[in-house]
Image (cartoon, rainbow, N blue to C red):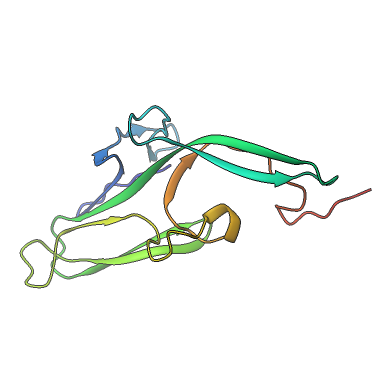
Length: 148
C-alpha cells in the first residue's frame, strides 16, 4: 500500500496504534508492507461458501486491521481527506490546522463504522480497512459467468 508525505500534510498507515515503517520503492513511491504477525491485532477471518456443485466449504485467512492517519502540519485552512478503496469512496473527514477552535490537526480514518454487522466481502461495502491475503473466490464472484 502506498503512503504519501506532502509538505503540508502527513499520511501514515497505522496498525495497533503504531505507524508502519515506510519503504522507498523503485517506482518512486513510498510503501508499507502488510504483515500478519501483529500480536493482539491480527485476527483470522472465516467464511463459509459453496462450490458450483453445492458442496460447502470454509475458508480461513489472516487479516490485520489498519487505519489511515492524516495530519495537517501547516496548511492554514481545513482540508477534506478522502480515502478510496477499489475506486469507491470509503470515508472522508475534515482535517483542520492545529489550534483551530473547531477541531484537530490529526484525523484517523478507519472505514465505515456505522454498521459493524455488515461484512465487507459479503455486501460489497467497506466496514473496516484490512490487510488480507488473496483467497479463492467462488465462481461468479468476480462478475464472471460460469462457462461450460
